[in-house]
Every structure is written in structure tokens, then in C-alpha cells.
Amino acid sequence: MSQSPIQKNTNKNTKLFGTDGIRGTSNQFPMVPDVVVKIGQAIGYLIRTKKIASSSSANKVVIGKDTRLSGYMIEQALSSGLNSMGIYVQLVGPLPTPGIGYLTRTMRAAAGIVISASHNAYQDNGIKIFGPSGFKLDDTLEKEIEALVAQDDLLKLLPPSKEIGRTKRIEDAQGRYIVHAKSVFPLENSLDGMRIVLDTAHGAAYKVAPAIFEELGAEVILLGSQPNGININDKSGALHPANIAQAVVQYRADVGIGLDGDADRIIMVDENGKILNGDHILAICAIHMKNKNQLKNNTLVVTQMSNFGLEKKMKEEGIKVIKTNVGDKYVVEEMRKNNYNLGGEQSGHIIFLDHSTTGDGTVAGLSVLAVMRETGKKMSELSNIFQEMPQVLINCRVRHRVELSEIAGYKDLISKKEKQLGNDGRLFIRFSGTEPLIRVLVEGTNKNEITQIAEDIASFLEKELS
Image (cartoon, rainbow, N blue to C red; front, top):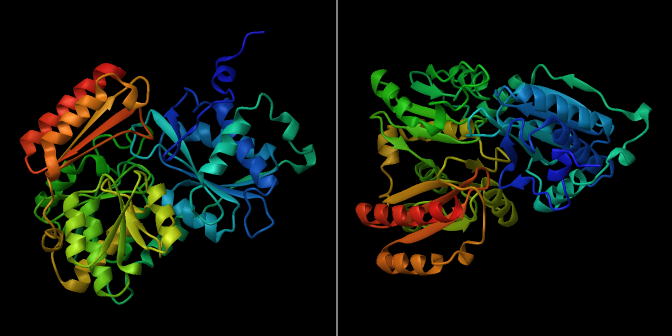
């Protein structure tokens, strides 16, 4: 008997997880109902066998999503798989990824699941899984899920009919997250008189983020707040900050805030229309927290993508910088391991571990606004905090992945370019963990020179890997 396409894809070597959960094109492996049901069953089995366990005896899972059309299909498939394993499912609808981390912990659930492909276009979707602590699952548990999904038959692991789980919808989940996010902003302050341009990318925060800023007193000018299932991240949000910058200038706003599809990352804009990435936000918050003796161990955790100018400024301020692999998951792991409370990525994942278990764009925005209120400074004054070293990042689409060192001529090319940069720059090349891309980052003092270097490397890799 011939194998089905799904069986062919789910062999013992199946790799489902990237750097941020499972991700793929909707209605293509692995984001098809049959495989998603098995993912739900695998998660459910680990909960039943207590490999994933909460302080509550109830086998309960919270599921949230962003606004993608395919979210309905995946939500039902996941719920079905979990129910078949005897797991009780609580659906909360569209809610930011950090909101699911928060609810998982406070509702004493065994796990939380976010159905989202973050900043990707609507055609893609994904599955992010939180453990009972509200933190993303570690690599060991991810591999166990992969192994279970790869089994020919999960039916033998199903419980008796009388133990099948149920699914219900939680109606007040958005309100719970709104209250939690607002608690980050100091009670003695408000946002009265502040005008904010807010772009929610037609995504998961389209309802909660405006409510949070408005309830604190701000006048909010909304962009990207009318999701229709296919417009998430489309020329809006954190990936398209030029629109926010234009609106900030047009409406004479004090600040602009752009979130991505699942609202776990943020890009900001000052009152003059200057776009500020995660490095700027981290610098503002790190220095302010240090000055208030709130920065644990005087340490900031970033990734290899962060600008050297940030590292130099932190050193001047007496703040230690630790670099991890790319991915907010790895930043969080380092923070938890060594008791740090601030970290993040240049892309806008900002983690305040005292308030959230993962990147939270809304919490990061509120934290910067609190600095503005407490210091009385405009955003442009705060953001002009360090001199960025020029960077060029090129994303090349690839068809297959190989060990780069095995490509003929690659080592020689990299060696040549590193000598050209000398001690005044660096190269950082990696495959994306969420998309079929390879990212080429070049940093140095001469913008024209590093642009040419990046283009040379990207052209070489595109030819070899396409």
C-alpha cells in the first residue's frame, strides 16, 4: 500500500520545530489538519503522562490565536487532538502571544498554545507552545512531540471514551490581559495629554492594545486595526514602520508604536518620524532601570544581531552585555538561568522578565512611555542615546539547507571578506529559524563597503542554495 503525502512527511526524522515553534504555509505540511491533530494528541499525551504538568490536577490547555484565516482550521484541529487525549481546552480567540503566556500561568493550565506565524504573511501559520510556567517549551520536550507525531499510529495511546476532553470559550480573556499589561505602567502616572499613533498590523492586538493605551489616558490614532483574515502584517505594523512615521508627523503625535501580527515585538517612532528598533528600546530601558537600581546584575541580554554601538554604550554606562543565539527563546533561557530581567532582540522582541515570560510589544511600549513621563523627555531625546554602527542585512530565499562550510568556495569567500573588514566590522550569517531564508548581516564603519560585501556574499549563497 502506498503512503499518503502526510505519512511520507511524518517519518522518524521529521523536524517540526524551528527557533520559534512550528511554522509553515497553511494547507501544506505541517500546517494541515491531519498533522495538527497529531500535534494536539502529542501535546495531550505528554500532559497525561505528566511530562508537562501544572500545579493543578486538571489537564487543561489554553489556546489563543492571531487573526489569520487559517486560524479557525488549526484551532479546531488542535482542540480535537487534545480532546481525544482527554485534555480540556479553553479557547480565548485573538490575543497577543505574551497574553497566552500570562493566562497559562495564572489559570494554572498545563500548557498554552498560540496559533500564529508572527510577522509572516497570512498564508503562513504556526504553533507556539508554552509550559505551565508560561515559558516556551524546552528543546527536549519539542523533540518528544516530534517523535510522537512521527509515530505511525497514536490511536493506541488514546484514553477510553469516557475520558475524552471538552472545549469551551473563555469570554473575558482580553480583559484579563488588559489589566495585566496596564499594571506595568506606574500607578502614579498616566498618559493624559499624550498622542500616540498605534499600528497593530491587523493582528492579535487589534482590540487589546488600543484599549490599554486609551484607558491610561492617551489619545490613540489607530492604523492596521481592521483584520479580515488576509491582511495581517500587510504593509502595516512593525515590519512597515514608514507608515507609522508618516502618520506621527502628519498628526503631530508624541510617539508611534508598531506591533507585529502576534504583538510580541515592537518598533517605535519618535515625534520627528525617526524609526527606532529594539536596540534603541533596550538602551533606553536598560539605562533607566540601572539608574533606579532595577536592572538585575547590571546586565542586558541581547543576540548576535544587535548593533555594536549598543554594546559600546552599555559598557560606558557600566552595564554588562551578554549575547545569545538569535531567537527570543534563547534570550529568555539565558535570563532565567542567570537571574537577569531585561533582554531582547534588535527586531523588537523585548523581554521584561519581571512582567512577562516572553517578548511583549505592548509592555515594552508602556515601559518606554513610563521613562518619558518620569524623565520629562521627548522620545527623540531618549532615543539619541548611542551611535549606531552601520549595518546591512540581506535576506536570501533558499530552497534547501546545507552546512555552509561544506559549500565549495564559501570558506575562502568569508575569509577574504573578514580580512577586508579588519577589526572594524564583523560578519554574521545564519539560516532563518522561521522562514526559508538565509540572513547575511555585515557591520562596519563604511556603509558603501559593507553593502558591497553583503551583496557579494548574498549573491554567492543565492546561487548555491536556490
